[in-house]
Image 1 (cartoon, rainbow, N blue to C red):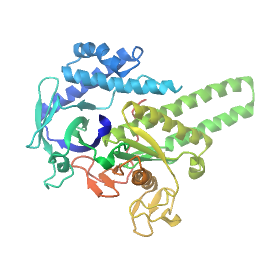
Image 2: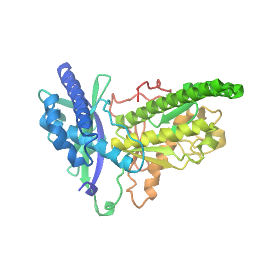
Image 3: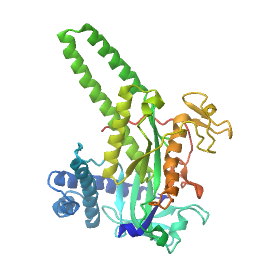
Length: 417
């Protein structure tokens, strides 16, 4: 049973030639299409996971170039997304049909083989491709501790394409020992800080700007105040129309932000997205009531979208996350010389203030596992350049996987909802 295993993921870049790249890109495209076909067929007709495969398998096989096992995996992916929506709907929450746009696909032991010579064979729409894993020269690299171990075995994995390169998130599992029985699953954590200047910042240094949202909310407020002051029937009709436009605009921004956060969690193979507790966020950020509504709505969007891809969403205490140094742990008001900058007066570490807070939020969830009787205390925080744990410290990602460390904001995502 799944509860009998501890699971880990090792992200490894693949060394592919031009022909292999084309085959893998075509296969990922067909995979996304297969998942969508299965979802479209099963969306209004299936109530349980076991219903999807017999309903959709033949159509996926007929309408895509996927092999039989990948067609099965596509129906499983669709059923996972649908059952998450069914669960949410049973709680009285609104749901929309899942869509598959992220360039990733699943592999299992039937469609993927890892060999002792550090190569991997992957099924594609035409034939298998065998390509080297880009492993570190040192034998003690973090991938090797799983690949060279008799204790860990390869299980379901995920292939991700980005900027012409491919990264294989190799899944490993081992049996839990006696002290780990009946504990909740640990894994990789993405920390998220919410704010005004930046609507959302992650522990992996992804920034979703909030400037445009704040500017437009102020414009809507100015128009609303003028119409209310006018007080005519025509002004009232215009006010209703303006309120509708504002609501649609804000929801579109929040959908784009939530999609970006989900994509970031998938990119770094995170099991948990950790937010700060939202109870007093208006007091902490100086946000307007509309910003407070936006924060809560963004959290809800991330929560239901994360459920469809198997990611948990949690909240942690918010105390001192903006004043604590994520490098040395020193906490002081003087660490925040300005709203946007963080400069530790003890160790001298400097960073964007929101980014520093995002790392603190994520690490707070990681550390909470050390005191939890339901967890093994063996989770890790995702950073841009690697992962960090309280026990083992920092582990770098393989070369080519977001290796360049930076505190500068990324361009705002423009992906639609």
